[in-house]
Amino acid sequence: MKKKIAIIFGTRPEIIKISPFIKGALRRNWNFFVIHTGQHYSEIMDKVFRENFSLPEPKYNLEVGSGTHAEQVGKMMIGIEKVLLEEKPDYVCVYADLNSSLAGALAAAKLNIPIIQLEGGLRSFDRTMPEEVNRVVTDRLASYLFAPTQLQKEHLEKEGITENIFVVGNLIADVVNEVLPKAIKENKIHERLGLENGKYFLATIHRPAAVDNPENFQKLLSGLALVAGHYQWPVIYPIHPRSKKNLDVFSLTMPAGIRPVEPLGYLDFMSLASQSKVILSDSGSIQEEASIMQVPLVSLRENTERPESLEIGSNVLAGFEPETILEKAKIMAERRRDWRHPYGENVAEKMLDILEEKLEL
Image (cartoon, rainbow, N blue to C red):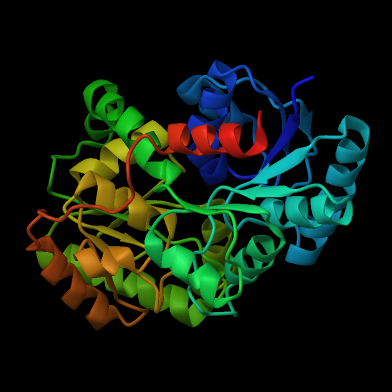
């Protein structure tokens, strides 16, 4: 009988990134099932995801919902453990640094089930970030780790993790290569928003360090407003529900030049991102996506777990100060898009080949 694998995810970015791996497992007729923790569950989000990526429904949806980190991880562990005890998989597969990854790894480790980490070794070296804690713990528990670049492998080795590390690139490279041509060719988001290619900026702000801190949130909005004012082009801001709520909680007003829009589907977002002058974001994954798309990025953060993007010049850190954000945006607006990204290609197939060989799937 074929060995069984449980694949665990919980958020839309996580699902999108892991989709090439799941589709590859389907093509190879692997014996696997999917647990969706429902960390950021929404019917609309899941519907768009299914339509865009043509993946089967998860076998389990735990519908954990929002809450504190401890509440989420605790609820997830309880639900995941019940499923693992019933299904008895031979391996548990998690991705990156989400609460669902940490909960899945902890539940599997308690049951002595080997863990496969599909994005291991990323480090910001900032333990105030919840994601950093998730990375360190999940990687420590994993038996097999796929590192996007050699740098992540070196991080793991310095922490004493030296076996079964495979440098293969990042799954997001597969996603962008698959989705971007369709997004550019078929998407009508520019027409709907009345935008001209290359004459707008795209912004995302959603991390707790930014939107849960009124001073930082105000600074970032002021910085985006300076960029819009300098270029006389709009800053399109798909506003996360958490950010929208905090605008009211902190009595902040949206400055002139910033154009908030409702959260976007992935194709809409990628189409906008690919044709923007510069992206300004506090996201981690967009640092990779922008590098792959050849779009300059200003990171609204003081550190990054993806320093390769800084090294190749596709990304620059700006922090929270408005004048610095404008300064960095002006530099990146003139940046030649001549870098080569380090995130590989055909990444999912490399992962699947390695696992088939190592685990005899």
